[in-house]
Image (cartoon, rainbow, N blue to C red; front, side, top):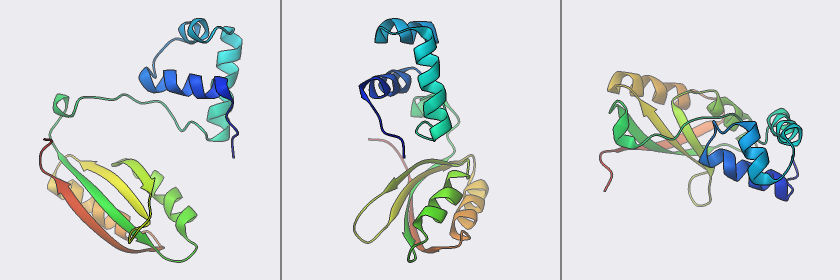
Length: 141
């Protein structure tokens, strides 16, 4: 497991705000060299602390598609394997561990109901998932 220091936390915060920020800009903001920023980014990626870079788009700026929240129950000690399998599904945008009746909560999206049905079958077919409940998000209020 990666141990974050203050520079790592500040760098991650900046990357969350702008994942496309140039290394030179990050270095200036953090008051360190470009080489230090690049080394930190490489280390965060290599250790798995940072999984990748993406954009955040307004919900109304892209295709409408189908969005949903899925609560997932995992059997026994298989949570780590289930999480690894879920991370490989491109339609899964966020994954959270939680307490209560469900072990994991996932945010999913698909371009159509047919695609959404395929994603649900894929998730439910993962060994270790014993139960799930999915709610389609109709509108943001």
